[in-house]
Image (cartoon, rainbow, N blue to C red):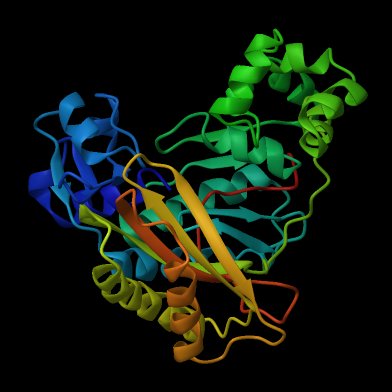
Length: 350
């Protein structure tokens, strides 16, 4: 979807339309969850500290997140997807891959399906979506960002190699800021540059990820669209208004975080054996501590008490700004991730 959270807020409040808007909390410890396109013109981005966003755009409007509303709209869009195919793979709250090689309406063109879905989404929600159409997930994901907002971009097999060669290396899946910097140091700035490197060379430098980079540089991605993705962890965390080093205060906050996480754990029927505590200090250093049980954890008391035990063994002399608690999957039966998203992928390149 196009600026999903922010677009919903602008849809529901005329006063926000055409203005720079951020979903999130404007306080000193706030973070931007989503930014409207008007805000993005000032350099405001999701995951940016709110104080940084306000420096870039002093007249930025902050509105609190309404996740129940976002999820409700996401379910509406999911129903539209399933009118065409059962092969829908969720990625995040506003992205999904669809395989329409064979579809319920026997439409031969994936591009036509994308156009129909975009139109139905707009008619149902009054929101715009962007679609990427290609023959594999790697290309479709990149294509979906190519003409935002309200875009539709197609990468056909005959053009795929040339298309990938022109991409900036930052556009490749799994290439974050650190990896991009390393690649730039090696003279790799585009897909064409990446394609000149051997698989052995890339693997030696980047490990297993090097194999993916090698294949993606050649427009190769054999991953199928998976309708159900196994959830590996569930957690909750909170950032404090003021840093603290008081165990008693941290214990109270930990209980609140544990309650939020365990509510989600029960709702998703998630089963796991490892409890993980996350701590971020005032200097932004982050540590994790964990404990694994022989059998899945099924009650809140065990979950919280384990988290508190881990907390008691953490150094509190540097003050703490964030605490989180969660459970991690270790091969036990898990629930499914039901966060529906709206990036569209089509295995058929037509």
